[in-house]
Length: 184
Image (cartoon, rainbow, N blue to C red):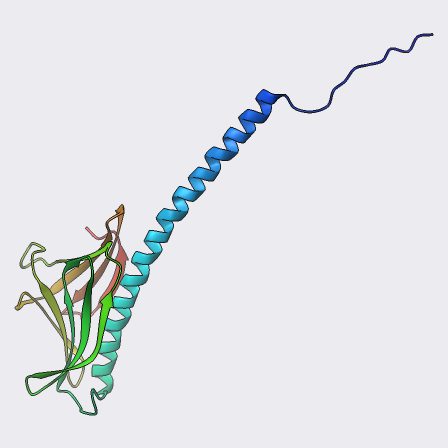
């Protein structure tokens, strides 16, 4: 009796291995590209949330009547300039028409820009915006380019992520301030 030796070879062919490696390579490149985009979106969110947090801090200072440079201000301001590149904002206490800086913050990411939009001026060409919280109740007054406005939007964008924006909206009448995604 003859035993037939079956010649089975276990394993994959070179073509099968190349197809699998190609698929893994495509998936890895997709993950890396999305990770870099997410990194930029995180930086944008972090900047917008820091600005929003500092704006709420000024509001809280007005409600609490906090001291600025060991003095009690008549009102509290949050001043921000429109920018595309290195920019910043100030938290200020106002006493009899003079300003006392509480905190000056620089935004050091040159790829993050801040633009303004309001319905009254209907453009975003203003140089700066001021959020003024008046005592004793912290009532909000907003001005842009030295003109009073009822509502303003600060639009945060990243130069390398065109499809993602954050919008900080403040309304003088309701006193509401909130941060939203993709404001239009």
